Image (cartoon, rainbow, N blue to C red; front, side, top):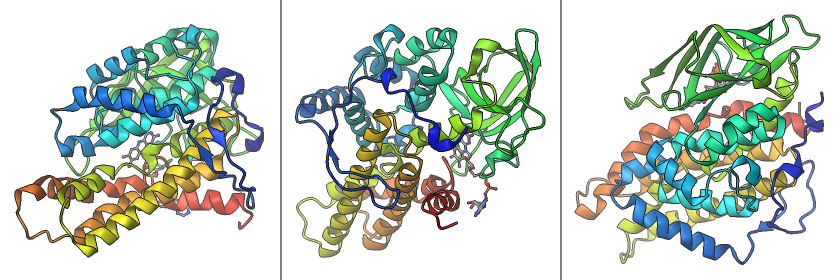
Length: 407
Ligand SMILES: Cc1cc2nc3c(=O)[nH]c(=O)nc-3n(C[C@H](O)[C@H](O)[C@H](O)COP(=O)(O)OP(=O)(O)OC[C@H]3O[C@@H](n4cnc5c(N)ncnc54)[C@H](O)[C@@H]3O)c2cc1C
């Protein structure tokens, strides 16, 4: 199947209410200006009020963890508010809200530094994938629990020796009576401790005509017999990702997502969901806020210039990300635009702590700078991963170059 022929099913999402603008498509990019509807302010205010009440006690560094911060109790509260699975059909626990409403909620959660990690992947990509390609049994089994903030997923793409070169995966699923037997391993799996299920990309055909053929996506119960999972400590002594081993794990037929063999095209459509949301340019946002808060009422030209530069870059990326969300909501597969948002977004997220460090006077131990310095220190260490997770900088640029005919 050609990648460009994969279109998400528009019928599965609520009607769009983004307001499209009129910029012509340049080359093959389509980043038309899109605005959020005027009525969105009320929802924004509702989310802000909720977050002020719920997040009062968490520290700036906790907030800086952004969507890697994990709190299942908070996820359940968001589910009860109707802010997970917002666009999905009501019959699956969704709320049939427009995609623009979801964008606003996500933006508010991230800028507030809410601990959304437990349900994040399930809401962002596993749920939509199941909605579009999953069996009736899978939809009924998982979507209501995801929307309630109770069922969590992780992404099983990378393996030892198969990261950027994802087609090199070696985890296999062999046909058995009523399903498949999975053997192999996945690596760097975010949310591995909290997740209940993984959507894994596996080889279901030993020999295929093309390198990208013969792969399928399976929903694997992480508590099933034969599954072993371990967290891996990162360079900041945190354990947000890990490895999973599969030893003759049985997966029933109705847990295949889409058609066996169509996994590669589906994964690429899924990556547009993974690469374009506000989380791809807001990971260092806490530091921007702390920079502004700690310099309120003081005239410092260097800080003012930096805040101006960062604001312009954030606003541009926001406009691009809203545009990609609109495209996804209308059923397009904006692979290239999502790659552009992720590459430019990760660059801003990594520049931000470095630029703040180069501009502020970090010898001052004035109390109003304590939070700024702590968040800066945290993000200086954390930010190198921003251009690795979800696809590295070089790989994204390769996708962009290929799509515009440069390679
Ligand atoms: C914090 C974090 C969370 C992650 N979460 C998940 C997850 O939930 N699920 C999951 O499946 N994976 C996850 N990953 C894995 C991530 O997708 C991979 O690390 C990434 O795709 C790179 O693969 P690799 O680590 O094998 O590096 P490699 O592919 O070995 O790359 C090493 C370097 O070589 C460069 N390179 C490789 N090939 C080329 C090429 N053809 N041209 C130019 N340069 C090239 C890369 O850009 C990189 O700089 C996560 C990674 C991190 C850091």
